Image (cartoon, rainbow, N blue to C red; front, side, top):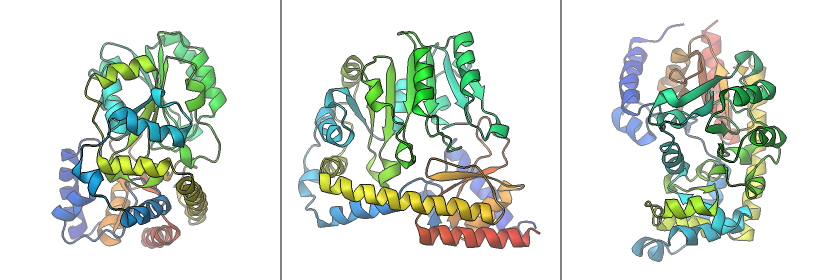
Length: 376
């Protein structure tokens, strides 16, 4: 099966658009503006929990938002007080970010000249944000091990290379692989007080296990935990993330432009997080979503897709012709996925596809089936 002339032309134009977005995918807004002939029915590229978004949006529609828009938003530490009630982490140890990516770019942007041990493939911002790529020690994850970290080998690399900083995205993006808490603690015990451990837990709430290191990190000054709230709550447009770190680090960042870095709607959202009734609704939405995700995985397997098991809210699938599958899914079926042909540590034969609600997952399964049947 080949692309039609129209599909080939579309893909070439998409690649040009993709170059403008760097190592990230073009936004839905950009796609719709540039490709009027395309209708996006399922956004399986950007990662969120649609069930959690629904409960937030219902609360938003009921609220008089004038004061959240008209007045200056609260300062960073006031927002942290709300997040403290959600996370059970002291507000004094929480730094709020304009999305997790602001925190990543700021913290990693200070790593120039220092050695950073980074498993690959992983979220591209972690190597984009470091001023000089020669300071990165790439740790290639093994496809024969489903790109999971070999903990014994990794610890040997830590001992041998003595990095200034170790970065772990857990669960990892785009592989969805999870390192259990005990393994990460073993890695941390290998580090001196001068070596920094950064653990990105942006997808940890999709895990079936309680493997967050937030509580553990409170006893140490050389651990930073990064959390994104846009993934598990589906509110990427609000730009809310936070990091758990030492009070000394937080004081430094508050002096560098973090004081008023969130907005009024983001503060409204954190007020909801501080409400126990809303948190209970979220827990049900989380359970509903994970159930739909697990069913989606089983369906992908049942139709013959080579898919990596995931503890995140997406799956990495291996296909013989990812450009063809990506284009057919988007141009013909209106399903936007993430083509992974620009990821360090991948051979380019993969797509990342987010799990959505059960109806949208069924639409994606049906579309993939049609492509598979035509590919025979």
